[in-house]
Length: 309
Image 1 (cartoon, rainbow, N blue to C red):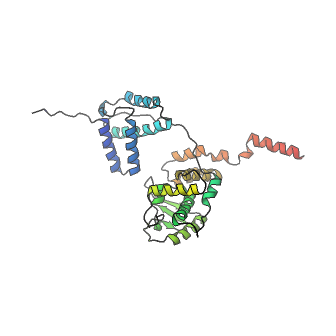
Image 2: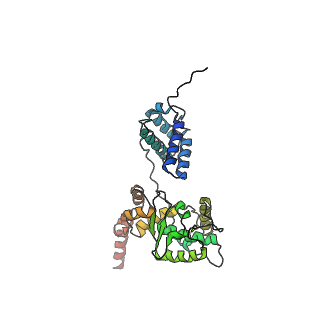
């Protein structure tokens, strides 16, 4: 009879499975869990995950990052992978499995792409109600809502008829990334649009506001493809739903003179970190009335005054 061998330590991969189970128990979204798993799978190209977690060292982590750089991965990709490992190690430390930490990898600052005003004019033009079908009309209403508050695609899909309170000019967002309900104001223009849409859409209070033609909840792919088709028909090659969120943030800060604290609440950010990111990119204080401060603009204006004399 063979002697039973004691297993002193799980491998890194086995421990990551335990980490995923704990995140599910904590209530993290399925999308986040899928992201964690896909990132960890990608990480396996650059480090061994079969070593015992107790033997994982700082040198192993540094070697992993070096391998990623040598493979030509973009800084933002490396930063994304490192964030997952950092979250994993933080959990391991809490469970007293390891005492390793990992510093964030500096990602490259990117300018958030947004829809231009000309593109928005095309997208916001109301379709011909006598010729268009329900999907096109529904998508037009959704785009109006996205420009009103910049909410996420998952939030849009989960709004129900009962969540719209037109007399109070607000909408209740119960399905959010932070899992905290939000009450978002509706401008007068959008209240009128939603009043007409809800009359046409009909349905019970518990029905989804933005349904498919059968009245069922829109799938994520269905919403994204609907936006893509709508945009392309309007001659707009950008088709991302998330770009409307960036566009809302830019226009709210720069064109509308909004402040960071209100933007944080509207976008549902749990901290000011991401909101500060928007503020840094779309610097409202610098952009607003820049003709009053630009040396070029001042010189052009002075030359025009001289010519007029």
